[in-house]
Every structure is written in structure tokens, then in C-alpha cells.
Length: 462
Image 1 (cartoon, rainbow, N blue to C red):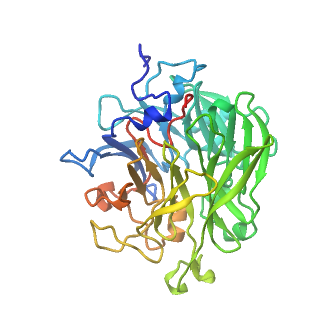
Image 2 (cartoon, rainbow, N blue to C red):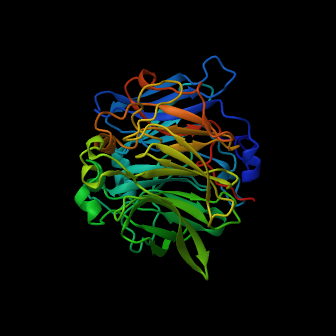
Image 3 (cartoon, helix red, strand yellow):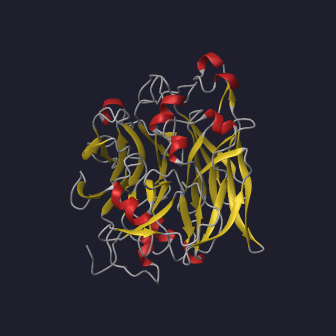
């Protein structure tokens, strides 16, 4: 898989990446909640000039059942162009697809084919034996290897979660990344300021806290994660813990500035136990210490308890449930998905400390059920995973969060759909709405765009 010249989908700077060609395909993981049939990778046609535009044109089933595909990533990306990268001629070719319940990691070849082909499966036993982890989650392509976060420990241990490193080419598990984890125990997302040798991790909960759904007693007891951790990326050592306050439960997705000269980023917080609001925070460094500041507050919406799932009836309100955010490659726009209220918000973050809301699209939602303009029926689920094209002109959102949580917040069924929004007009594309039977009974989760997207690549040059 080595090339004589760098992969043409690698870009030295975010500015170069923003000028990349439009994606022709989107890869989507889809899972069977009942674990009665295999999960799959669906491939969507994203070329508006194609007769298959907006449809599922490729499909690859896994060989096993019960994996619950969730997040995934590429084997290699623009970080391979960093000056110290040992493998500058690797190829963006393989999708690295963990199963969050099975702890298997699937490697799928996308080259010269529409439907990816499974070429390797890293079994849960290898991840446990070599790295001491289970429940793999986020995948990022680093200069020297593949980084995979994991929520749980090995051999039945609930934690700590952490990060495993895999070889770029053989996909063998090399081992645990952390040399000194300090006070860190919960894991979820991670990313880095690659030119500053800083890695950031966020917190969700251990497998026992999430796998059977959100535990109300733990939430109200403020037991889920509420901290960020800052690490020395090269020395692999914990540097500093920043506590957002235990009322701010579950800081999940991390979106650092793509500009490698900057050291700020955004994290979305699912819920405040004080008023059910959601929030977005900016992290930054000041006087040599990492700090955070809440920059976006999204209130809960009052609702008739009769319209709410059992979990929310006592509160008489719908929480926004910010479960994903995404930052455009030019660092100018932040997209915030409110899975509970059924809304995707667009913010101008040219000043990362003073975001300004400039757009909103309503779609689905626990109470509203806002329909898509291409299909007038009540829509279940809400905007959840959000992905932005490299040029920032297109946003894709899918509707399933996590099997057990889907069932709690959308007990009538979460459905299956994926929508596309034009970012200039901030309106839904009526021609692009794969849904229902298009996903063959599976629920779609994360989207990856052909050639890279706003949450896949890191850059070493401004």
C-alpha cells in the first residue's frame, strides 16, 4: 500500500484541504439493534450529477452479529505529511471500523470498488491482550500510527478506558498509548493540537454505565464524566485535568482548531442536571495552564409530560442533548446537533469565545417530530452524528445515537434516516434523504466522506 508520491487526498494545510474536490461517496455505519443480523457499511452516492444521487449504492455486511458499529475512521490521512511522519507514503485506503459492543475492529478496503471489502478483523482478545482495553470508539490517524480510544478495560474490568495504538499497515495492536494516565479513568473522544504535542481526551462513562442505557440515578448523582484531560502527546503522559463542574455531565465530542498554529477547540456537553440544558465550551491555554469557558448555552424546551418518554416525564421538558458537534475545516463554522429537540444549529465561530448563531434547521425531535421536506411524515430521531465536507458547503446528519439510548429517548422507535444540508442557505436538500428501507432495517450512525472530511484529518502546516 506504499505510494511513490503522497496520497492525493492528503493536504499539508487546512486551506489546501478546503479546496479539495467534492466527495462522490459517503460511508455510513449501520447496526442492527437486535443483533439478529450483521451490521453493515452503507455507501451513499453524494454526486448531484449522478442518477443514483442520494441513494445507497454500496453495501458491505460484517461476518458477525452484535458488533454495534459506532464511530470509525481512515487508516491514514493528512497527518502523514507532518515533517516527522515516518510513513509519508501510506495510502488513505482502509476504513477502520470498531464494534463498540463486540470490541472487534474491522478493516475494510475501499480502493477501486464501491462496496468496501473486509480484509482483516482484529479480535477483541488481541485488543485486550496487547492494550488492556475493550469497547473501541474513536479512530484518528496519527503520523506514527492509528490511535483508537476505548471505553472499557480488559478481562471484564470496567475501566479505565484509554487509547490503543495500531500499526498503520498491518493493523496489529501495538499496545497501550498512555505511559502515565494520572487521574484519568473515564474515556470517550480524543484529538490533538499536533504541532504543540498536546492531546486532549473527554469523558463519557464505563461500559456498565452506558451499555443498558442512561442510568437516571447515576446522572442525577452526577456520576458520569465531566472533565477534560490534557496530555503530552509525545511523552504520552497526563499533564492536567480540567473539571467543567459536576452538573455538566458528559463532555463528549472534541473539535480542536484545524489551524495548527492555534491551541483552542470546542467540546459539546450533553446535559446539565440543574436545568437539562446543553452547552458548548471552548478550551484554551493561558499563563501555561489549560482552561475552559462556556460559550454556548442551549436551554431545554418545555413539553407536556404526556408527550415525553418515561425518563423525561418528571421534568416536563425536552433536553437538547448535544451529542455531536463539528467544526468546518476553515474553523469559521461550528455545527451543533440537538438530538433531543430535533435541531441542527449553525454558529459563526470566527471568534471562538463569542459564537454567534446564524442558522437552524428543525428535523425530527422527541416532541416535534418535524418532517423532512422530501417526506411529509412525522420523523423520529433527531440530528445526531454530523459531518462537514472539506469545503464546508455540505453537512450530513444521521439520526441514531446508540442502541440502548435510542430506545429510552425514542421508545416508539428511532427510525433510520440521513439528511444533507446546504450550508450557504442552511436548508435541507430535498433530493438527498435516504431513509427507512434504504438502510435494510439497520440504524445509521457515523458518516465518513470519501477523501476525508472535517473530523478526519490533522494538518501540520497553516
